[in-house]
Structure formats: structure tokens, C-alpha cells
Amino acid sequence: MTDIRGIVLQKILLNEEGSLEAWSKLKLGYFGSEYVGIYRTMSKFYINHSSLPTFEDLLLYNRNPLLKISIEALKEKEPLEVDLELAVEALVNDYTQEEVLGELDTFLDNITLLDTAEIKEELGNILLRVEEKTLSAEEVIFMNDIEFIKEPELLSLFPLGLNNTFDSEIGGMSLTEVLAIGGMRGSGKSNVCTNLSVNQYEAGNTSIYFSIEMRGREVFNREIALLSGVSLANISKATLTDIELFKIATVRAAMFQDSSDLLENYKDHKNYGKFEKELIETKKLKEKNQLIIVDNQRLTLANIDLTLQKFKAQFGDKLKLVVVDYLNQIDIPDKYEWKTQIHLSAKLKEFARKYDVVLAAPYQIDKTGEARFSKGILDSVDIAMTLERSEGRIDFVSTKTRNAKAFEVASPMNELTMRIDPNDANVPPKEKKEEDKEEKKPDPNKEGH
Image 1 (cartoon, rainbow, N blue to C red):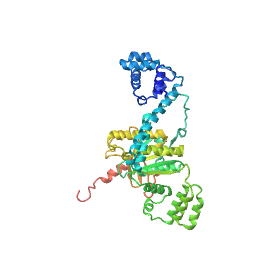
Image 2: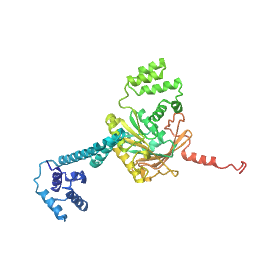
Image 3: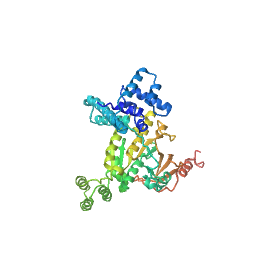
Image 4: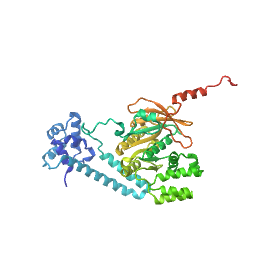
């Protein structure tokens, strides 16, 4: 059997071409007990001297007689004529196979104790654990690798569509970025998220909405209300007029390919149940322009990772937006502990980069406007805003921005459909707050004052 671990270390100690790049891809876990000591010593030498050691350097640097014997033995081995880059790739592949087989052995030993949901989740956890052990996220970019482009739209920046001034201030969102949406309960976090999803759908893209607290049906009803202009209350209570049903039928037909004939037939028979049944049974959804909802009360990081992997393969560049509603409720041990919250935020940022999407995640704030449980939850976030909802409008206050100053804006909101108008509301947030203070002042002319 080829000693791939020894081959890689030997070539690096011989300072073959590409040694430094190869070294940057290596991890301690790749080396078994036979070579872990040599790897550790090489690592210490590199940290102390900022250069890779040779065999002679390592023999002088090391003071362990047993390890010296191992270094001498590796030096005396006949060098194998193989490219270093290929050797590193083979090493990583071997390690990955060993890790997967070990994980699967443990999984199969316990599979009879797990239910269906637990089996799926554990498979996802295996994927995450193996990826964390093998992932090399480094990408070296030279000056001739990227062409400078002046036009921002060509840099994959796109507007959120919640408020034109907000989009102008931040310059649009970029794929790989994370947007944090803070608010207290009832402030409109989920409503903002459904508006984000619908905005991308109307732009011809696909979005994924991970819902933890709301049922999938509730999210879908909200999206239909936004798209059709029909009252959300009427949709939820099933008290729809014929005109409203036709508006919804028009929206539903637009979600499927070649469905105009069914919409025309619906105008005649006016049987919505029949229309919906024929639509689902005889027509196909648009291939790249969809609203996807994942209803999972036990949503884990592994669930998110696996789902994004599947749908990114299906929709490619058309998958622009992912919503995780909401960050504080992702199922993870000690999820209310501050270190865990920071870890969650970092993982979501990792997923945004890995799958080249904008990831929006609402989070809870306390009465002071700070993030609950951990201020560090925003460390990995690119753009953050807090919300304040009032009758017919919603206010956005930036708390973290990319290359922009802090700002406040407000958008009108239709209270029936919950649609957010991207145009600025007539009354700016600061002015509104002053008006509220004036309204709360006691009237000295009233009795009892």
C-alpha cells in the first residue's frame, strides 16, 4: 500500500515546487500516529521561522530522539516520482474516505434506535463533520485573475426591494452576504422576510424560506397575499370573494408552465377547487423561478446545509435568496448561550459563501435594541437592521452597514396584504418618534391634572 502521508511530508521537506501551497492545505488530522509527530514539529518550525523546514532543519530543531529516528527513516525513503499537488489530493481523498467509513460504522450501529427524522439529521451531521475536517476555504487571487468592473450591477449586487433609499444607501446586497433583521416580537420580522422572498420571485429568481415557528401554509398564505393583492385575513379565514379568487388563480397559474388555458377555463366554470386540482396534476412548476418553503420546527445547521446543497444544484445561479426564520431558534445544543449564538451566525455566513446566496436571518432584540443573548451574533453579519412597526408603515434602522453610514428609513405597508412599498413613507422615523412623544404629553387643561 502506498504511504501517501509519508510521500507528502517528504516532498515538502525536500522543498519541491509548490511545497508552501501544499502545506497550506494540510491539517493535523490527515496524519496518523506514525507521522503526527513530524507534522507537529514542521508546524512549530514554520510558526517560529516563517519558512518551511528541510530535513536538515528538522533534525537540528527536534530534540526528541525517537522522533529523530522517524525523520531519518523518512529521509532515507526513495522519493516517488509523483506531482506534489496530486499527492496532496490523494491524501485528502484517503482521509475523507476513512472518516466517512468511520462515521457510517457508528451510524449503522445505532440506526435501529433512530426514527426517520433522526436518521436524516444524523446523515446531515456526518456531512457537516466531515466537511469541517476536510474543507480548505482558501482561494488565492492574483491581479490578473479579476477584471475590475465599474458598473455595480455586474458585481452581482441586487436590491432588496424593501425600501429604495435603503437599497441606495447600502448599494444593494451581494451574493455571499448575510442580512440580519432585528426586532421584538410582533415587529414584522417574518413579514419583511416574506416580502424579500416575493421580491426575488417577481424578479424571476428562486428563494428558499426556512420556517421554524410559522407553519409552511402560513408562509405560503402570506406570499399569495403579497403577490395577489388580496387581504391576508380573507385568505387565512377562507372568506374570499369571486374577484379575490380570480386574483389568486392568476398568481397560481403564473407559477406553472403553459397554464394559461386552465386560467381561461376557470373564468367559465369558476370552480376554484377544480382549477387548483387540474393545475397541480397536469402542469409543471416553472423550472428556475420558484418560492420554496421548508417547514421544520427542529431545523438544524445540517438541515440547512443539505437543503441548500440540493437546491443549489437544481436552480444554480437563479437561487439568490435564503431566509432562515429565525436565527435564535435553530436547533443546536445550548442555543441560548452566547458562544453558540456567535457560532450560529458564523455558520450562516459560511453557508452564504459556500452556496453563493444572500442569506437573511431575523433575530430577537431586547428593549434596549440590542441582540438578545449575544451582541456577537452580528459579528459575521454584513448588514444588519432593526425594525419598528406602526400603523401603515414599517421603519428600518441600520445597525451595521458595509461601507456606509448609519441611517433610518421608513416604508408604507399595506395592512391588508402586508405588502411593503419600496417608496419612502411621508413621515420619517425620527419625526414620527417626536410626534409620539408629543401625543403622550399630558394635557394640563384636562381634569385631574
